[in-house]
Length: 354
Image (cartoon, rainbow, N blue to C red; front, side):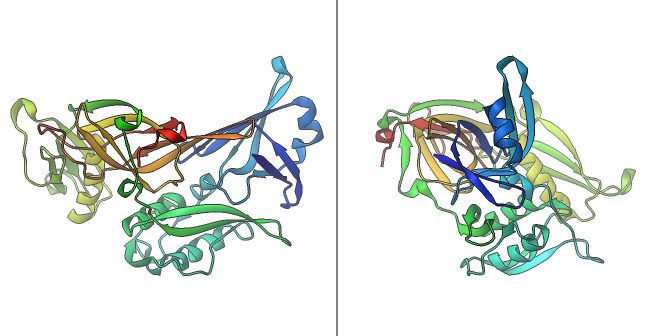
């Protein structure tokens, strides 16, 4: 798999085959090494490295000389990281940025002005209608777009497109989420290896503190039930109750405090962890995959949140990690349901169970 090299003006300098490690959705960066001679002859002039029509690559930012091996270790941010370094600010005189309309049109209004000449949102209609959405105050652009699109069944798609005149453009657009669990399920039947763990000592009672002082302070109690649902009714008492405090002093209303508290309790409550090795599939961050493990009764549908890319000798190996808080089927014989941490995909293609 060849990478394209470009200078600071996006002028192509050639293409090379590289061994590279890349994290998309986690640290959002990449790293590779070249000889000192290669650095001096070629890479010292390189500002961008990328594979066309993919999200792989980004600006070159940090060269580090390794004298012991006479090499230079080069790191940089992937395109997604650049979006996380911009902030969505509320309009002057407003507490929040509110949007409504076609998804790409909303994104174009936000993205094009922040990255003129580098990022662009196509004029095409995505078919995704944002009826009404309120961005979190001063959220970063990446998080804001992902959360907005997710609420309306869509994901963020990032691809580098080469142009004939003006070099490349990083295309950002809304795409419908693809639920691969409807047509593709990874299970032990396909010789896929599972590791599962139940974390059952999480928080089930969260005391949320909003704006105000002492007796005038806004207080909301949130609880989880046996199925992991969050509400205002207590389900665990005595030794089974586990309590934590969430301090959200900027919350002015009960609704705002409940929203923040619910997100916090989601990260603290009981959850299931599953690691599963399956075959690489054509999936992107935001898509849904499913897995089944019969010994413990796990049947899980989860959103892909991270891709670990390892490129070696022209071959790409992808490790998908999943997360999210989607409802899952209870284990055989009952028991709690909750969230999950990760799934790993590395097996051969013939290990897929369709």
